[in-house]
Image (cartoon, rainbow, N blue to C red; front, top):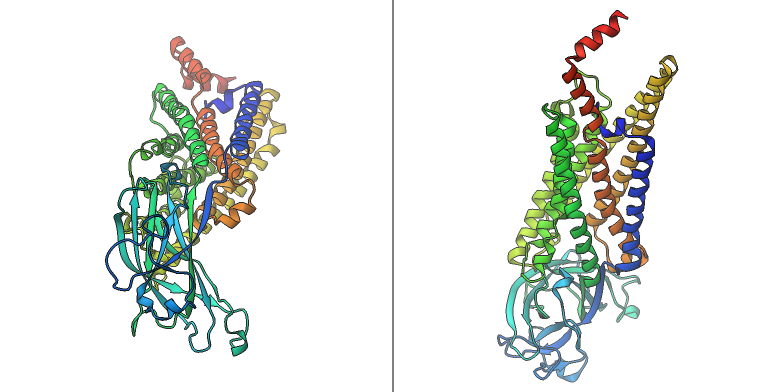
Length: 513
């Protein structure tokens, strides 16, 4: 765009800007490395086997003054007299002497089963586990439990035995995949109680083997990381908002309609501001069960704006004047972004939307592979998009190389000016590619999910998250600032108007000479 700050800014000021951005980027990384703790914590709970002979309604508590009647092992004489339907597995979250906090943001619960191998009671192929699950809460240790959710859910049970299935290997444990149980989008209460029952009859829970114990792994976001994350959002929100408003003000001062790239930069600033707004402050005092859905929508809007900007940013520097400034020229790449974003949005609305009414439901339990289908379609569209983006970047650099070869034939002043502009643009393209790579990695990690084991291996995972988030804000700010109309260009235009000299007169005079 002619007249942008990137073309008129002195090299000294540009170097100072680049150094300042680099310093803020290092600060963003160091905040995660030195201040923020690990993003998540996982606590493993061993479910207590409570006896409920008459299957009475009510909540069975594993410890405390009102703890339930228990059996420690199914090999005990008392357990031999019980039916499988008389056992309720009870878990109190958190452990004794601790309490939950709204700073934890969310709570995930994952089941891990200890199942022993028996020749006469083996796990069948493609077996379905039926779980009668309930969740209750309270805010002090003396009050009664309040029912929050209750549901009967089904989960696929996938287990393997590492040794041959012979009588000599009876008593060995199966290796079973973790089973997603629950996802709470708000931790608004101090104590939670989970009661699980595995109902057994002629058609339900047959062929699931001999279950010895049930473990529940509770995963939540660390409160310390939440404080750092919200603080960063609070700092970046006014910064990007003011920069976006200033950018649009400078566009309006030009007195002409904004071009396509200018509109995309403005939309990018708005989407970054939308992602930054720290609404999490309000969720600390309110039970907003839709926060995870809202956060996914905000990230989706930002991803869409960023991906569209990259395509048009490359295309506007590649296409000739006849095709530029037309969104229809990018229908293929923008269509892929819209398709992929729509697929992920639809699935997210289905998954998170159901969790608003029933956090025990899981789309992963579907036999039709709905989630896999959605992820594959979105993944294919994103792969095609990035192949197209890489091709456009290659063409841009090849086009720049052709212009560099024509520089020696230009006058010295013009040659130096064009050489500086080309160098700045090539450097900005390399920064864009680095930002794209980090964004893709961040996107994949968010979709696949970070397990507690994986995050413990990634010692600098907090630094990666805060660094990537800071990079987005710094990149958007840099683009907004460098591509805003320069006051030097506006001043020159005003001088020409004041003296009555038009662009056509100047062009004609040069032609006569």
